[in-house]
Length: 326
Image: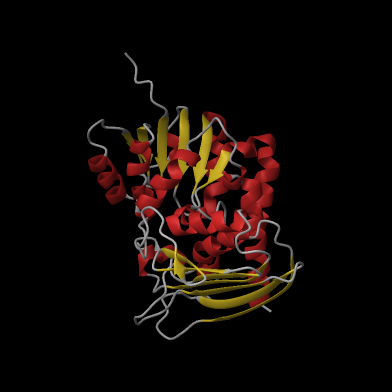
């Protein structure tokens, strides 16, 4: 009797690509193949899924079948080509952020895909920290009132990108496209009608940075409603203390202020308990598992996961890059 479970092919098996196992199993999916040019990544994949021995390939071209999901965690530089090669062989193609390496590349991909663009979803995990979900509820319920100021501060040393640091070090703006993109995505979640009328950004690369391009930046923007948003993204902080994703958020409204510290949410300095809180840096495997029920739900469109929403994220990233290069 054939296995009735939805099927998955993983593209890119090292780094973040190795962190899908728990999410896949939690949703009752079955991995049938893994693809990666790195023999060590292929060996690790084979060991991780040894219980049902999926196929392992060096190149995407070697896999000729159709599946329910392709999950592409390989670097974004050639992702458009990969998406186009598999889009008609899957019900859904899940891609890591950013979907592609630039706004122009995304526009080209969406134009080529046409209606098939609806089959592509982008895995943006950082929304799913419990404190961030609780924060979103406060905003949706208008508990803060009209938003007047949003701050998102992240400080990291960049080593968490290993083993993918080697290709990110050559990017002009690794922090922006591979890191702060999550901060932009969260900003648009909190302020979905954001229409930026003013934007200024300043970037720098501190001594000891592993990155060739601008590694740290501070951007200020004003929305047409008057709300001021600030994103501080530092990826070359070499000494403690540092501020993780789930510590540096403050949102001020006309009625109240909300902050996230250490994975906990506070409204007007009063702690508001939520389930599964308190992890300063919830690991990606756990965040993938929290995201999975939505990500792998083919019965509902979930536009916040789609390329049209992701285009808004890359459009703002592109505007920040332009400001940094002035």
